[in-house]
Amino acid sequence: MERIVGIDYGRKRVGIAVSDPLGIFASALDTLPSGSVLSFLKSYIERERISRFVVGYPVNLDNKPSEAAKDVDHFLNMLRKQFPEIPVTLEDERFTSKMAMRTLIEGGMKKSDRRVKGNVDKVSAAIILQSYLDSRARLDNNGN
Image 1 (tube, one colour):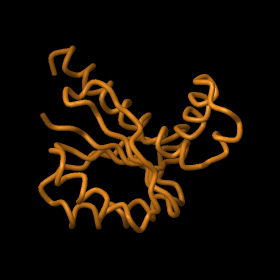
Image 2 (cartoon, one colour):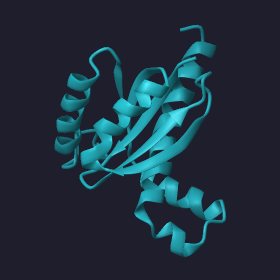
Image 3 (cartoon, helix red, strand yellow):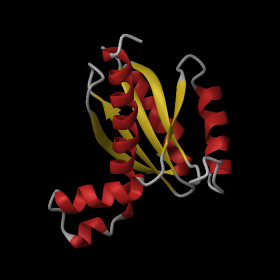
Image 4 (tube, one colour):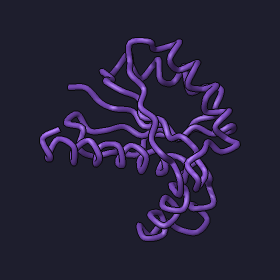
């Protein structure tokens, strides 16, 4: 079965999440330095079948791209060039870092572990991916 990969791209770090084979649940997978994300994905694709990338896209409250969107656009160009056969979907990433921090707190993670920014990044990627999976499920349930 195929999986969907969620990506929370940042200039320094990238959070990676993956769906279960049925495409119902997202799980945080890893956090990587930005420069190694494409090689990580290439290696991951050699082990797992991937049907789609879902990339968090930074927008402001007025729905216009934020300053960080330039970095994500550059990454998207490289991602599409490296993996032209895998479709890419953009997902609004507003407030995902705050939601990730709240999830870590509610999950009982120690304060010292919450300060490790990579933990927030991979949970943010899982939230981005889960948002996509949930919206896709709603569309399927409505017969669209």
